[in-house]
Length: 129
Image (cartoon, rainbow, N blue to C red; front, top):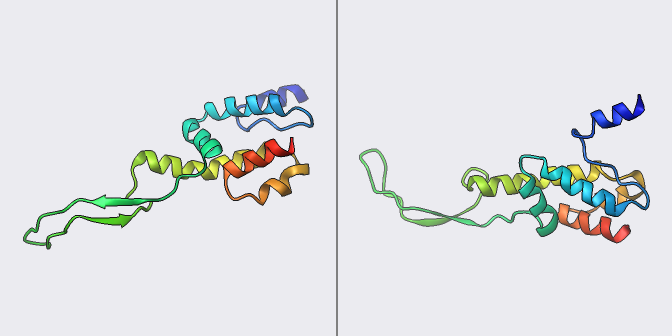
């Protein structure tokens, strides 16, 4: 019965890191994130770091009867004006952190939880294993 329960939930959560099994866990974890719809962005967060906000060029808009002319200018990037691809990458960071914290045991949790990004967590896990 226990094995059936473990198999039933294996697609719903990342694999757990067991003592001395880092290479198997790494392989399974990366395969697990590849099954997620945003797996490409999860990998980028883990191996390259989080998406860094930049500035966005706002194109000029000619004046109309109801509004004044808007000249071309730069504006800080936010969730409201970033591209769809950048938004997926930006939002994947939170999920990558959650998946890493879910896939590790209590012994290294406190060390990993102190990291700020998924990339820092991944490096710390490798270092501890």
